Image (cartoon, rainbow, N blue to C red; front, side, top):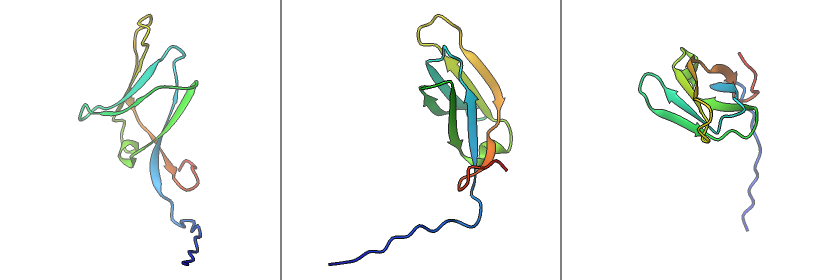
Length: 98
């Protein structure tokens, strides 16, 4: 029989990533995150509360390259648009903002 010892090694260097935190429109059924430069869809999120947080690549922390669309699927309200959105830099190990 084989015996395996597993232990957790905490990183000593910070691992910087982007964190996007949004206050969600209460009527939003879907949230689309788009890259403004390439027009590519980064994420489609169904909000489950008044706030969302999502990890993003560190490239989105350098300059405001994100476009956020909040859509109402009931078609009662118009879409809410946030342009030139930038993610904040956080340490992936501690989740503290730099």
